[in-house]
Image (cartoon, rainbow, N blue to C red; front, side, top):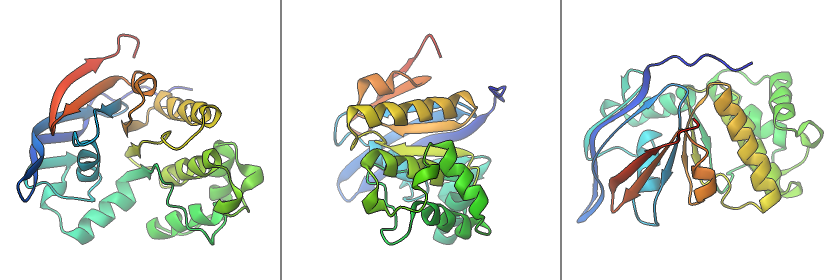
Length: 229
């Protein structure tokens, strides 16, 4: 059953800039994302996509401007407080997976639970079943294909019921068949009402989102709204 979207702003960037010495990685960027919206961040290499995602996720702080997530101004928080926000409000899906190699699939998910509250193996197993990996729960990452590892990442990102899912090139390292599986999972999450911000180079994947935000030289070049979203 598709959830009714609550029409309110979950994330707001206000005149965000990011400088690295003489490099302007982001130039006065303002953007609002509604709860339940799927936004694709697109643009060539060096356009600021990863910098933007890192700032939204509290992994980096803006040089100027404000980032407000679920009513909390991230730009005013300490590193410890930012870690707590990531733990409680954000689910991260990485291109490189970042699974702990000596832990099984289910144990990797239980680690995420541990940092949030308490490990719950039945809940972790249910999360793996959700992404079609119940039968691979006790396999190490090295025993999983790239697509399977990415699905473990998705299960891990969802386990603590985040307000916002951030995905950095989630299909970038996958073959066509596994890319399709992961894209369908992301579409399903969107239809359920999850808020998703996804960096992608893939034009076809980007067009599935409600909006495509195209960056160029650290600034928003254009914002396209899909008519069918």
